[in-house]
Length: 100
Image 1 (tube, rainbow, N blue to C red):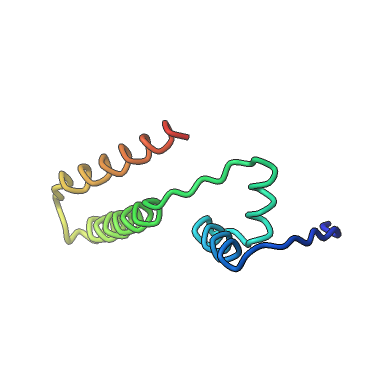
Image 2 (image 1 turned 120 degrees about the horizontal axis):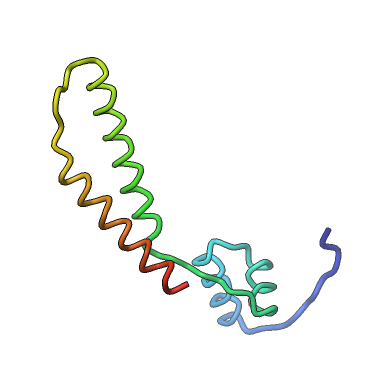
């Protein structure tokens, strides 16, 4: 349990900059400052939300196709574009993990 306080003074610009960086890292300001002060790595991947949206859309499309196949409404599906998009996302994720 956190029970200790640490008060410090800073300029309004410094405070705004710290708050902006914490927001970009999706962290509360106090946690961001602790992580920074203790030299913990803070990694922000700006493209991750877009990749997650694409993966979810692909998953929904694949699920819909599976349902249609199971109902007998679709006999054959061309998945070239699906495979290409999935390969692109995989490649981007691989690049990110190599940097980390």
